[in-house]
Amino acid sequence: MPPHKHSTSTEQARVELQVYNPNILRLLRVIGEGELLVKEIMERLELKDRKNVLNLYLNPAVSDGYIRLLYPDSSRHLRQKYLLTVKGLTLYNDIKGGK
Image (cartoon, rainbow, N blue to C red; front, side, top):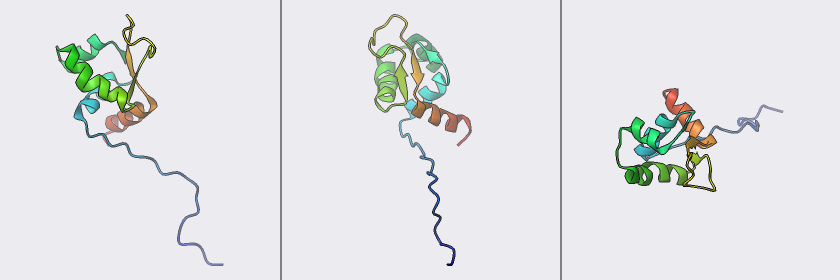
């Protein structure tokens, strides 16, 4: 029987994440592999308006599944920090790797 033209491998193709929001990309670079308070994020982004940081950076990134809250049941927790999800870490590693 001749060999098949198409591979019969069950290997899954790697899913490429495409982000069109430059604020999310910038935020992922800032958070990296750590955990940051809103104040620390604002300092690293060099932004002063907490409301804008929440509305333009954090909330969209949480909604899209790139970052998560350390204390998800208490959004106003005194020590609330933000960190990357698996999806966010995947994109961060792609960014960091120059892809």
